[in-house]
Length: 354
Image 1 (cartoon, rainbow, N blue to C red):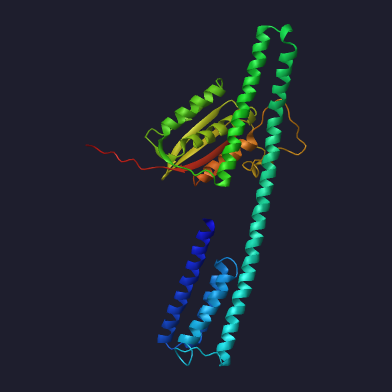
Image 2: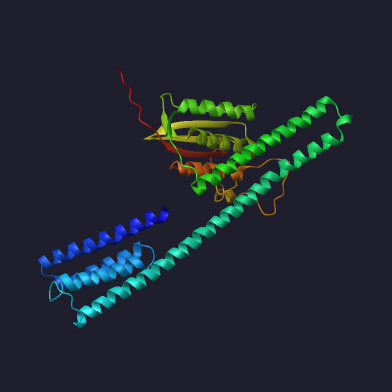
């Protein structure tokens, strides 16, 4: 399917530019500037070689341009004649130009493809490193707790057993969320999942987010600042919920010294702007550049007793918002703490009265 699309696109570019060159040449002929006709076709061949894949279209355009110039715009008119040196030289120049341009653009495209693949490999390595780092602690805890429960069950009280089982349950739930995040980012990056936007009322979205967040962090208060008016936003509500919850969870886990967590949404023009702010110590400036890439851990950092999913969680956020046609950024506040901000296009609401 992709090959057919590329074939149609390259063919359309070739035919369109040749027709444009022929039409321009007819116009030049009307104004008695025939000496520029060959230049027009040379330029058309150059553009075709530049914007199409491989050598085929450029060479075919060069041959077609040569025949067109020789047949319609060179004496004797409406007859092919390559015995005249000028006509032969023009043909050679067009073909050589198409070959050189095609060769150059092909190498540039190959270089860009290799560069893009290298960047993807780097991102995969960073993602794998972050996943390995994040999974190590909960898996170790689950293994240690379950081993303790199996080996010392008879000597433990019911309260101790319940505490260990609850710890295993919490770690398992955290791992499930981690895997969900990982699946989301890999599917969206690979293009396997297309975003289907459905008009969603902002208040309903936030209610669902807070309900799910409270189940995970019942003791963490979230201050809400929402518009008084009804705001309708086209989105994949499940994915946007995931974005907001990931950022809120990131603040709980990583905002050292935080005492206040705020979720603010306001409209600006045709966009709804989401802001999640905390009053912690802020984000290390060294981490800002890689905050949304999935790579946050130092190579010398070791796993500790705290789960850390900022690398994967924020990478998922960036991928989802990008798939919605937006962008996400984070910055430190002058008053202390950090704020994460992203915007989504809103939908106009028409009040109809019957």
